[in-house]
Image (tube, rainbow, N blue to C red; front, side):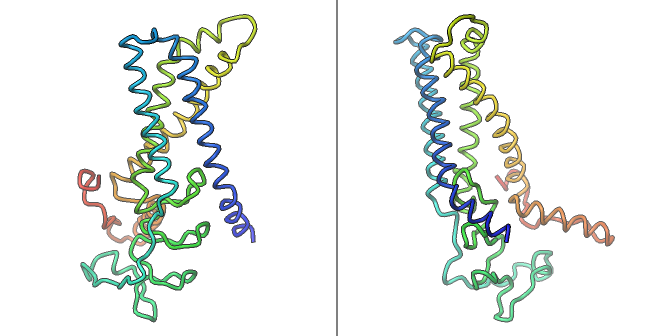
Length: 254
């Protein structure tokens, strides 16, 4: 089965992706401190100190939030979970749920356990995850209830960090591009770091923007697909527009 093989592949390469991400980020940090910082500010000056403080703050937050996202379990279903009474018997959420013969409204056939609302089974991690957003190979983990905040912060700090590297190293990058002569290690580091930061800033920026939208609308990536399908079905059947029950307004959602 292709899907099962792909799930096994993600489980195996997950730690490799994590190591690769750490190496890439570390390489950019090393390049900036070694080859860019001495050029943009005299060592020991006030400007140099400010650059150091900002860079250290961004570096710490990138690595800290990344580490916490990797090692934090995304959220497992409690062993003593009991199906709560419906908050609103006529709500769309309660009407669409189907009860299992054991009495629970949602049941995972793979885990053989009840599933709370907004819980989904991850075939890669082989477990149910509370408020699961997606399985991310770059963190070798699911992104869910317990580690979504640090995942979001990691993307935010990484994006800002990439912009910071590009803004501060742009003059050095342009100088290296225009310089004719033998290529030095510093030349290679600066050019590659700038190109990598530029590429990552676009990819992470788009992903961060997507998750800002999801947070503002009280959805996960999985729920967005489901809500979109339910909305289309409601329109086709001439029913009232589908409304996400969890959405209480962007200010309260955040």
